[in-house]
Image (cartoon, rainbow over all chains, first blue to last red; front, side, top):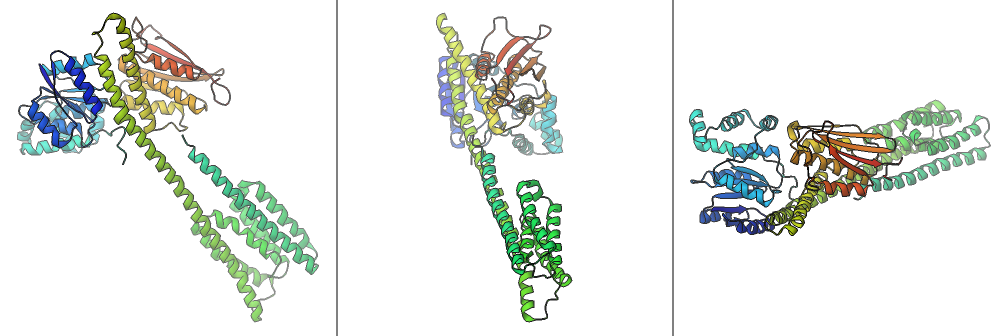
Length: 193
Length: 383
């Protein structure tokens, strides 16, 4: 049984996912949230999901920041970034946010189920970070942050990095959050003012 | 789409033509005034000939818009009238009014700062004319007062015209900016609605319908498959619309627009997408469909074919425009999953503009070639 929580601000998509996930044997729809701070954490604490299906474009803030904070929990569920605007540039911030998968919202139900099963087994489903995308993204960051990105991509944990740099792990985490907001993709269609 | 720049241009043209009519009328009136005064004084000699200048110069300025913007033409115009006044032997000349009217063009055309200099220079110029041309002013009080009026008028005329012209220019600039912002805001709103609402619903419907695949009796499987394809096409149509709303075509050349879309779809140039050739000026509808079919073909090559290089060629000749998208990817599946590769959408778009769509294997049997051929007439419409 794979327990899945859906975090998405659009009710139609949550309802659709609810129906589809319920109908699939071996997958349980364990709860949903619209991404607002006050109901994300209660839902996660109550339903203890195996996998969180997380929208990239949340009304407030950024799905990746939320992903990063969910992954700080012990034990942390698997998180799949579910984006309507899948772009190769998303691979780097998703990796840094410790996402376990990156999935386009345009996938068919079968692919979605397969992805959820794969990720639940402990595999990661992230597109490789291409060299050019990495270069472009690094150009947006300051030198300290660039070094941190390098270490994180090498697979070093934040605690290890903190020990190497002789700083508090809290500071490293803070820098990662700063990097995530710097790499935040412009929402293709910003909410009108 | 509202053609705002066009509307403003027409509005501007109305103002322009009214102003021109007023200007021509003022010049003709000044010329007529000079003629009446000369007839009154029964003046003779070159002065009547100079009257002809008033008519000819006004005609030329009315017919040739380029002349009206030419500083050299202003200088000649002002200079000729100064000579006229000097020749008439009296600064209280019948040509004074026509001289005043020659200042109107530079006053309204020059930027405010230069026009202010002109407003200061014009009375000085006339003061010089008064002293050189005689009779010496200032001997009697009445003569001095008359001169003061002659000097104050050019200053007032140039200063007020320049101020008004500057205010009008600022106003129309602000209006263009305001309309641009309004359109941009509207575009953002539509894009947001498409992305935030409609597209999410399509994704939900796609998930729901696709979850039925393999769960229903065989005869329904085809219907479900077709519905899934339609929903996939709708989502990708919406992506193209969003891209267009974010950076509208608006008269951009087709090749540039496709190049930009390619850079968006494959950031970092991987796979390499090249766009070459240029399209002639085409009707907006035709360009829009060509752009969409081109974007669609690129998206398909990226999504389904795992291509490493995509080549987009635009060729124009023999009354036909050809748009060819070649990729080196997996090629078409044996049993052409029509529509799964978005072909249906492309075919119906092609039909809308009367174009032919050929889909086939690449030159050496690898990859896919999608070629669109659209007949075009001279004015850029499809026939």
